[in-house]
Picture 1 (cartoon, helix red, strand yellow):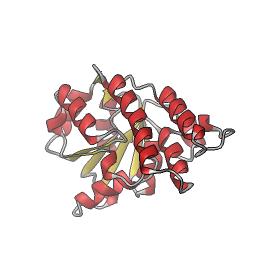
Picture 2 (cartoon, helix red, strand yellow; picture 1 turned 180 degrees about the vertical axis):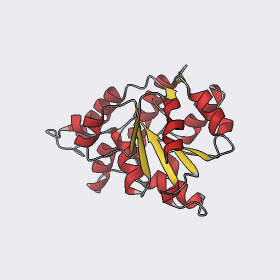
Picture 3 (cartoon, helix red, strand yellow; picture 1 turned 30 degrees about the vertical axis):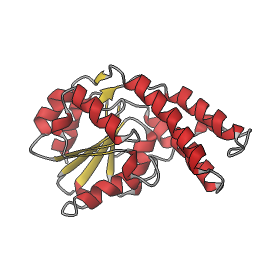
Picture 4 (cartoon, helix red, strand yellow; picture 1 turned 60 degrees about the vertical axis):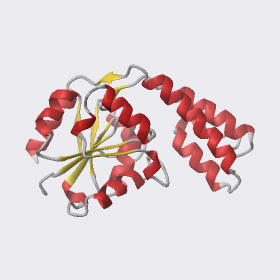
Length: 217
């Protein structure tokens, strides 16, 4: 087993307890894209995420720059509303105090980089992170591995085998594992992860348990 040198954290509901209404965001994005005939009206959007719906719309070749900008405006509206007053997940500050200086600490989030950095700074933890990779760094959002690959390319001295990723959603696990990075599921239903094709390398119910995972290998 390779010694871990770097950690990639998801942000929403991993580091921060945000109130972004992801189901409502997805419904609004679906309605907008389907209304412009970029998604089938019988699309089983409940099984998708906002990012995979946008990906499907792009794949039609008919998603214009203007329509994509309107789609991202929907995303930003929900992000701003949901991140207002977001607080740390329990134990995050204590965990980061125990990790800083020992590991490269990074964030990979589908949020805009500006919004992510602002939320982390508001909670006094931005300074713990060496890098924050928002959606501007990705050609495709999670579950694509783009954000994770961006971090790997930013630290060529640390191979994928010496990183782990921590997140609460299957899209975090899917993206990380496609980039060759071990994934630790935080506070989530493993059965649902498996239904989405993700087999976590570890599971923690409290963020502080990540220290035990790191100590074990």
